[in-house]
Length: 299
Image (cartoon, rainbow, N blue to C red; front, top):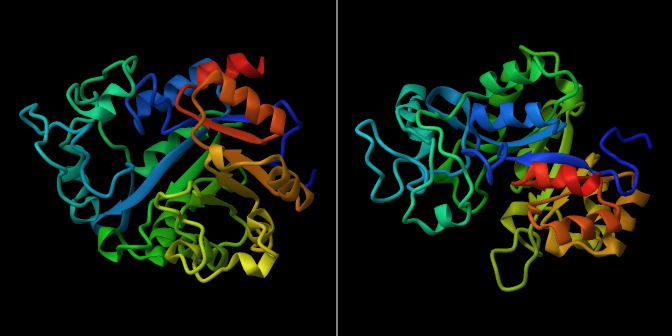
């Protein structure tokens, strides 16, 4: 296998999703450190820019009411300001250390342990942490919103900010950059083709598809260019990995990806039976909120 992100069947790489969202506050340093402590070899994080083009680690384009408390300790009554409009200090004034107990999102993770005082880290903080953990792989998902250009910086600006942060660290071989907005990946390919790219996709019927003809998320690409095969289309872009929603995956699609030496990293797989099904299909990576369970499943 020439692709370093490919794995032998039944031995997928485990990526802690947003750290370990089922266990500790998402996208926080305490969650990342937990992964290192239990021996998880890879972490997936979400990155976007605040004011001044500084990349920070947070998922939602607005300050998330389901996670955030203000300086007085009060839960936000509605989603807060856009992340792009805040300074680093303004973003880090919010406490992201526990889930809102009355929000449906919070009820999805009843076993998450609160860590009051947890803040959104800078990408630079996470890269500094990664340097201290030999072999740790970092999947940086750049959050960009192809349907709404007002929610974040343009794709090329996001890529430039992430590359500037990476330039201070010798981690290129242990980083893969992913996005649902394939315009980001096109910009990355042009600016730094040596950095591994992973194309995220979502194809559940009747919902907000990212892969369909004419989709703004596909950066002008068409399935017709690859005979209707999504993995072949992605492989033709020089990608190292395809990251489909796990319920979209089929054995045929895995075979097509592997025939093109494309790694298949599925998201977000939290139930043991689903993890076993993905292993049986031969996926190369499992992105999960419960990485300790995934380690147990793969033995």
